[in-house]
Every structure is written in C-alpha cells, then in structure tokens.
Length: 239
Ligand code: SF4
Ligand code: SF4
Image (cartoon, rainbow, N blue to C red; front, side, top):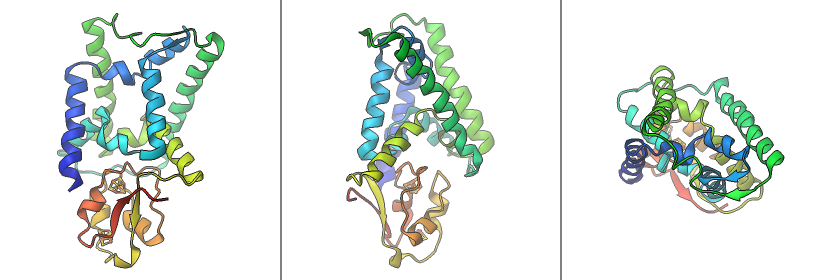
C-alpha cells in the first residue's frame, strides 16, 4: 500500500534533482564547507537544519520518501537484487559525518555568521560544473550499490543519515511522539517475508519478536508493513 505512494515520490524526486542538475544545490557537502569559511548561511545550511528538525518527528522517513540519492538506489534495486550487509562498514558514515561537520563548525566558529545568502554557490555555477557535481553523486551511489548491494550508499557513506539518526535518538531519549514502527509480536507467524522485503537488510522479524522496532538503519519505507500478510507491523506516532 505505502509503496504505491512512496516509490513514485522518491523516484520523481531523484529524476527532478538529477535532470534539472540541482542535486548539489541543497545537498552538496562541499558548498556548505566553503560557505562556513566565509561566514555565510547558505541554502544547504538551512536544508540540513530542516532535515535534522524533521527527524525529531519523522525519524529517517525523509531517506526513503524524498531523498534524491535514495531514489537512485530505488531505481537500481530493480536490477540489483543483492542485499548490502550490516557490517562494520555501517560506521564509515559516522567518520565521514564527523570530519565534515567538524570542518563546518570550525568554519563558522572562526568566521561567525556574517550574512545569509541562500543563493551562495547556486547562481555562479557553470553548466559544466553542475554536470560534474551531479555526476559526482551518481559516481558514488551507483558503484557502491552495484558492488555492495541495495541501499549501500545510504548505509555506508551518506553524510545526511547521521543527522537523522541523531534526531531520532534525541526523540527516543526524550520519548517524544513521532513516526515509528510498532509491532504486535503475538500475531507474527515467523514467515520472514518482512526480512526479505526490507531494503536495509534489517532482521525485522527479530525486531518484532524482541519488540525493538527502533533500529537506527530503518528508513521507515513501509516495505515490511506492506509485505506482512498478518498485519503485524504498522506505522504509529505514539511513544
Ligand atoms: S512478515 Fe509478518 S508474520 Fe512474517 S515474520 Fe514478518 S512480522 Fe512475522
Ligand atoms: S524495517 Fe521496515 S520500514 Fe524499516 S527499512 Fe526495513 S522495511 Fe523499511
């Protein structure tokens, strides 16, 4: 049910951002670093703050419903059937995030917030550079997915994922209401279909049985909900 709505949305977002060559404008990890060393609050600064704030309620739903990079991986999962492993490589994204956010914080710490310029890095970008920046994202996402399996880029290297994981952790710590998975373990028939359908290769059945549905890699795509014939799992906004 949810996939009929989610897949077209996230694939449309991917096509929109990549065909219009605007992927880098809001989500570039590079332009915001340059902005920080000039003391400029740019559009991607706002975008990353919004993503963090949204995750306080929606967890990682942005990943599977709206992220252009996720949309590319959704398209690729038609051809790439292998699941990416939940190995130590999951921690790579935290190293990338720490270095990247450290560089940004240092930039603003040294230079302060001097001005707001939402067009910084947008208006002065040549067509060739836009192509290079857009292809740059594809060059990371496509081989990782092809080699390591579905959604490998999300799991291993995405610099945005830790924002949402932090937001989700804050929400869970303070027990805020928000979008999450709930399960009725007693209804589970141990068919493992939910495990097969989870793009993040989470052991959903084990989560159901242990009543721990707050796996940080869950992107709230709803595949497990749609695939469970016994209606064990559902979305909930309750704590
Ligand atoms: S698909 Fe439903 S019944 Fe089957 S293992 Fe998962 S939660 Fe249990
Ligand atoms: S656990 Fe369910 S909602 Fe979360 S990523 Fe896996 S299939 Fe999607």
